[in-house]
Length: 147
Length: 81
Image 1 (cartoon, rainbow over the protein chains, first blue to last red):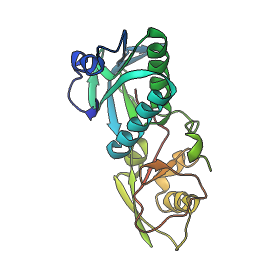
Image 2 (image 1 turned 120 degrees about the horizontal axis):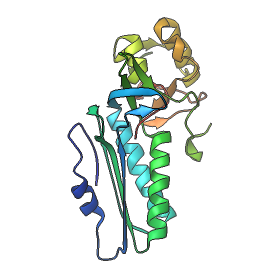
Image 3 (image 1 turned 180 degrees about the vertical axis):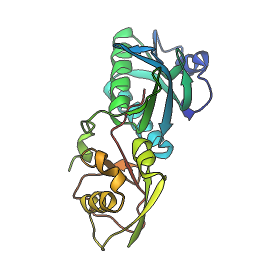
Image 4 (image 1 turned 30 degrees about the horizontal axis):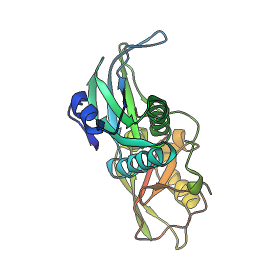
C-alpha cells in the first residue's frame, strides 16, 4: 500500500495491508502532530507534497527496504493539507518473519523518507507566526544521484 | 529554450506562484537554472543557497544538462513525516 492523501489515515487499513501468514512481526510507526517543540507551541501543521516525485521516492524507498532486509510487506501513507494537534501525518508499516528486520527496516524507511521524499510541513504557531520547516543542509541523496 | 519550473513549499510562497518560466540557453545546466531562477525571482534569494532541483522526478546535481522536454521542479530541503 502506498498513498498520499488529504484524508485522515486509517491505521487499521495500513496495518492490515502488511499482515501476512508468512510474517511473525508487524511494526507500525505513526508520525503525529506535536504541540510543543521546546518552548514553542504549535497550533496546527500544513503539509504540502510534490506528489508525482514523492510517489516515485516512496516507491524506491519501499523497494530498497525490501532488498536490504528480508521483509514480507511494506506500506506507507502520508497525509497532506491541514492537520490538527495529535493527528497522524504519516504511517509506515512493515512485516517480516522476525521482529529484528521489521524494527530496523521501519526505522530506516522513516529516516530516509524524512531526508529524501519531497513533502514539506508548515508550522502554524500559537503566537500567530507561520514557518515552513526546512533543514538548512542538503538531503542525503542516494549514491547514484550524487554528481 | 523556455523551461517551466514548478515551485513548492517556501519557494512557491516566496515567489507568489507555483510555476515560473525560465529562459535558458541550449545545454544549460541545473546550476545555470538555479542562478537564472533566483536572478529573475529575487524573492527566492533567501533560499538561494539551499534550493534543490529535481529533473523528471529525480534529484539532479549542478552539472546535469537540461533539455526542453524535462519536467523540472525547485524546492527547499524536505520536511515531511
